[in-house]
Length: 260
Length: 327
Image (tube, rainbow over all chains, first blue to last red; front, side, top):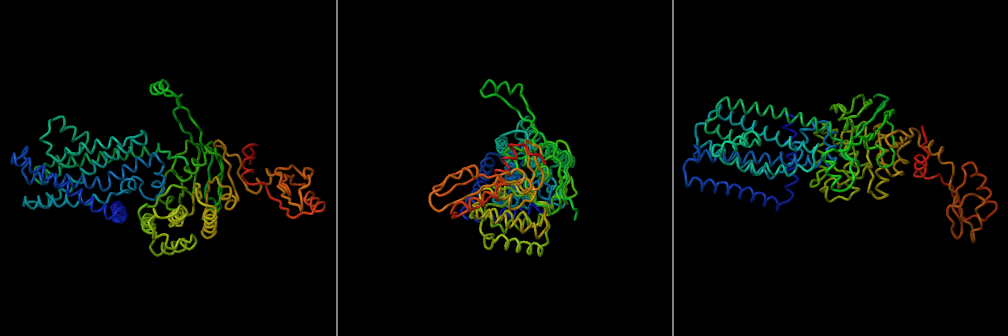
């Protein structure tokens, strides 16, 4: 609860700060809408050639695009800005300020920077998921719960992945470019995992866990995710959170800040 | 409250780093077989600081001041030795400890660049869980002391360096810390702003009884704020004690400035002439001879102006490092 409260406070600070730039507000809204339009156009092109893509119908693909946009929005909202700032702060010694706060320093470092404009993507993603769920018409409480659990598990895995990459800056220089690889691979998650060859499916699930964060939750909307997969997603989330926490603590022991 | 704020026993911290000669060949060799050196940034430092004391931490660049402060604030693990601050082991970073300390670093800012400081105050209030009413009272005090007024309502990016530093101080003190680490708090500020910040820190220390550890290259900061100084030289304590005593011990001479009516006569017999002007001179005179020399100057010449000054603190500190004075 405390973590959520702190995240909301940082979010409010981010929104308040970025609302001062009206032109930027319009530009970012336009960027999100163009992104949505391109996504939908891509879907349209595919669906004009085939009504079903690897077993996914139009409304399933819309749900997938919705989860893709939502997860991308959350990454853009907290994860990317905070992790990029963490890497800079480690090198410049500015992490000191997070470490002297009476809060968990990992939490502060993880939600301390916000790109409020990503809220557009979060809203658009939620809208698409909602529309797709209504179109499906048979979502029970259990299915909604499964969707929420798999979404949270997926986000936890992706967050841990980013944190692990950001923590490598305690040992390495210039890891920012590695993060760009994530963005490129994340693009692949807008399509069902089953359209990709086996090795790529494996890579997108385990190596860079974008499929876990997008395909799994979208599959719950189709009612095609078994209990073992939900359990697996929760276990993967727990293990990755635990591992990234260990890496963070090891990094902190190594951190020496910068001299004045 | 405990009488002792900080205790350290044999506190040390080492860093390992890779060294190599310039050139591509050396870079390749270093990649295959790196040569590492170990530097002892802080070595066997032991001292105690009483609650409410202001202690200046002085040393040349690389003396270990920042490393020591970071160990005291819990930002660095010591390599060996013990440290306790406010009854806690700092590097464990317990919330009870962190709620009672503050760190201010000159030219490193925590305030959101785009927002008025008042907005950030509210966030730090929540982080430190300061009740709203108490926070309002503290802020009102801080704004008065720092003469902040409407400054807190302007976006931080629009503030001058001095205004920004004052807002940083207000942010750091919002939770009324008992232990304050100040690392070059007046760096880059103009003389008037430096004096204001010093005045504010003294007043805060007086009102709250807070313990303050100050590192600064500005001797005026140290002179105005600290009765006690800890001189660090290559990680070791060179001197720990009263600033005045150090000054008396090393300031064996005083500076006598004399101006006479008309052209300056030969003044070398009164002391070492450091600087000569058309109508006078600046003389370096042994401390014990000052009364006799000034009396002779006044009786033997028509003196238009005469001042006696202690050796500047910069000179005292330079002498301390040069002579390796010990506590």
